[in-house]
Length: 173
Image (tube, rainbow, N blue to C red; front, top):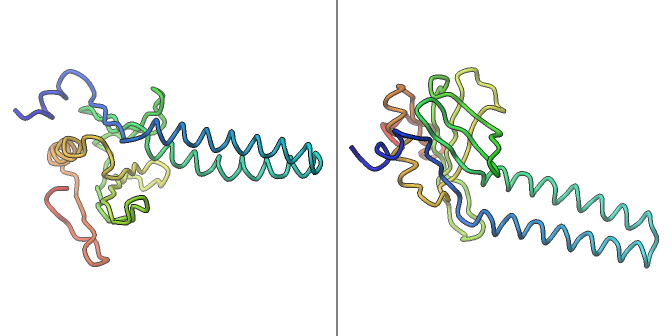
């Protein structure tokens, strides 16, 4: 019995993303700085200009911050499902018996100027909002991939990889 199987038997396995707290605190700091700039604008140039500046910042950083925070949320895997969790609250879940396929493809990592692998787990019902996506920046990606490979084999889930722009079926992640 390998390490992933031994750890999975008793409780769900949680995979956390590298630097989540640093990124989250950074987003809060940038948004706070934007608020300070907005207040300064209000006192120098007028109330409505400052409010407009503040709303643009909240919209911009709110959307980017939400996307980043959700994208870096914990991945929780057990025998029945895979889910995403942020600060202990589950916000997305997909049962293994409802998974149609898992796709692997390359995305740019702008911070390191290279490409990294990304994964999407598609539900059988095809509902886009229920699709679970993550990239290989999880702190223990090797264990995560090993565990998903085991469960994909157990539940007969197709695995596809992008090769030269086309999707091809493969045996494992």
